[in-house]
Length: 197
Image 1 (tube, rainbow, N blue to C red):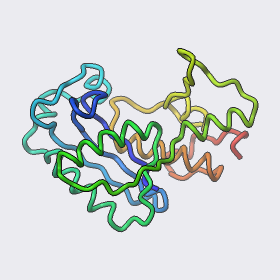
Image 2: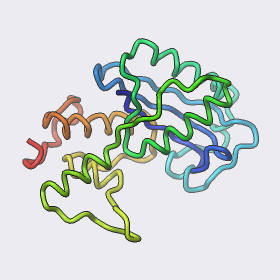
Image 3: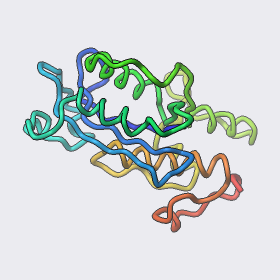
C-alpha cells in the first residue's frame, strides 16, 4: 500500500488546489515521495488551510514550482514500480478526492482503484476490542489524526503541516498497529503502548 498525505488550499477538490503530495511505500518505507506545486489558476484559498500549512500566498503562486499537472506526473512515475498501489492514510477519502481532481486536471487515468486502508477504522476497531469508549463529537467518532497518533504512542503532527511529515507519521502509526513495532529510527524515543504489543 501507499500511505499518502496531501496538503491543499481548502477542503473542496473542485475549488481548492493541491499544494503538495507526501507518500511512503509501506512495503519499503525508505521509498518516499515528496513534491510541492503551485496552485492552479483561480483556485480558492482558505485562511485555515494556509495557517495549517504555513504557506504564504506568494509561495503558492511561485512560478518556479511545478504545476499541479507536473506534480501529478512526477507522482505517477514514482508509483510505477510499486506492486500494491492501494492508497492508505488517516483520512484517505480527503487525499483521494484531491488526487482524483488533480489527475483529471492533468488528463491522467486514475491508477489506484477504489479500495483504501484507513487508520481511523483500525483504531476504532481496537477501541471496541479493548472495551474502550469511543470519543464522540456531534454524535460521531472524534478519533482525529492527533488522537490516533497519540493512541500509538506518537506525538501530535508538527505545524506547519507538510504532506511528507503526515505520510511518515501515518506510516509509523500503521506499522505500530499492524506489527507492534517501531519502524522509523526517528520515532525510537516514542515508546509503543503496552496494549499494542
